[in-house]
Image (tube, rainbow, N blue to C red; front, side, top):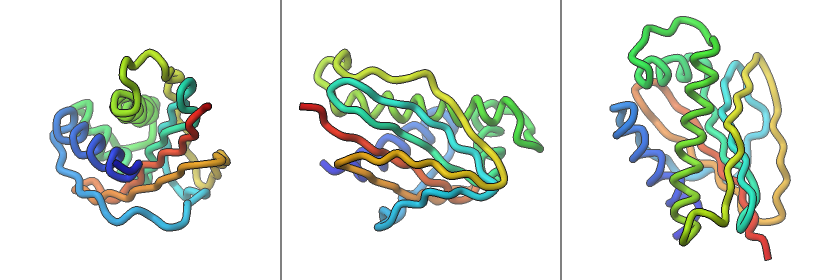
Length: 153
């Protein structure tokens, strides 16, 4: 199973069960997007058997709509709730991926989730191996889930 399939399965399941939102994966991107405009990104680092990171990138309007569904609140600006929600989504997605990659879930550790947002920012992690970026469509708008992992020897 490819990273793309892991990403798609985890994202569809989490959005369906936790946010009551239907999301549809699109074709994985062939080139990584490094710079994000007017967006919010939730990030979780991974270490152990695999090292790397999982990120969910959403335009500010989509991040606010996703947060509204997640928390059952009306959200009209990118505030701490939005950043926390995007970080927690990254955490849930990374946890799901971790469970698929590890027999006992103890040989991969996750960092505390974090979030960045702004008018324009770049994220650049340079793995030696696997990188996948899968776009999704939803009623909240399009967003991306990115997984960069290297298996440790």
